[in-house]
Image (cartoon, rainbow, N blue to C red):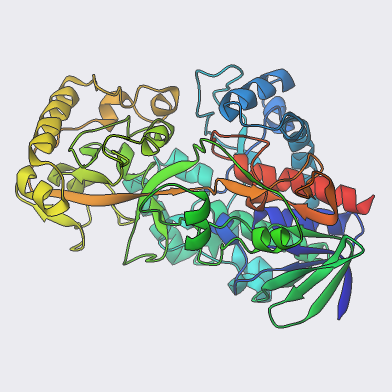
Length: 525
């Protein structure tokens, strides 16, 4: 048995932030990661955080206000937010940013913008932040214990990738490949953020352990006082246990229980199986489901890159010219260039047919796309791999994939005509503020007319709809409504009641950082 003030379960952004804050507040802190490497879902992410009315933006001449921040949060939440949690996030995120910069993490402004430019309180920049790339060698013996995504693009910081034109740009690939040769230890984006966090945690005396899954929580007189590991080790926590173990996206049983999306594939590592959710439920914790969860994306698994990971297509293949997304009827159903326009249609249900009309969905593209764009994490213009469906005619491609041939041919003809005219009359692809910030509408359009034609089935993937119900102090609530003493939940282990149904790049990581600090302060008090 070993004893600590604080035990944190989970080595992603939320867990590491909580551990850093706890240690800086004078608490003896132990962090346990179930996987062999630290990083969790953060390591595979973009590494962006959304912090409204932050001091970096103000110093750069920004005019954001707390009122505008709350207006935007309320809009995106779509009625699904807990007012107290939303208020805590809005007011404490800027303070958390200052705290972690003071801890040694050099956050900086990113060129990314708010997704919903039409929303009250939206800003065209200044709210999204990331960290500069860092060399993993600063971690010494811990350098190999931080997870790294497949492919070279993680060597670029999130902001660097945006400025180079994103993942579809040859410039981004060229820069990443140069860095792979010249600076093989360089880490950017989510992997870079984790590297910064791990280095900061070690510098402040956090004890880190990997490959140490927790099996159950320990309670005494109603208070959580520690954990028992899968190996039977008893670890006690004098001040509290923090669940930062992520969601259940890689647990098929829990996905079936809480989600209603046929064909689901996880975009998270295999270790995100809802361990925190299960352990907390065993002692009476309440679970909350985000209704109409819009944190849904489309993607597919690349057997050559990361066969167990759903690779998101919404900011890569789906925004590129000479591509479109269709359903089994061969019809487009949304603006592919804005993944939040696609999300609601994936939950559409046809009661007469007893099916979801837009699942499965299919990415359709032609030789023009293959000649100049990036597919499945390959450099732009690289040959299309053999596991992708291919045919010399759209009719033949449709038959291969179970798509209505007449519908696909008609849709491609209509889409191609609109592309040549420079305007998508059916779904206005590329015309949202989000789309216009990156590409002119004509740049995301392109005819689908040159053989060979290709198709890939797209699968839904999402941030989990369910999580532990926590209050504005990050305390886990019992099914009877009162906080469970000594138990906290941060990051994706907690239901996203601070941001509700909608999705905005940077919400998740910023929330984990913010409520991690809130939890640490509560335990220190």
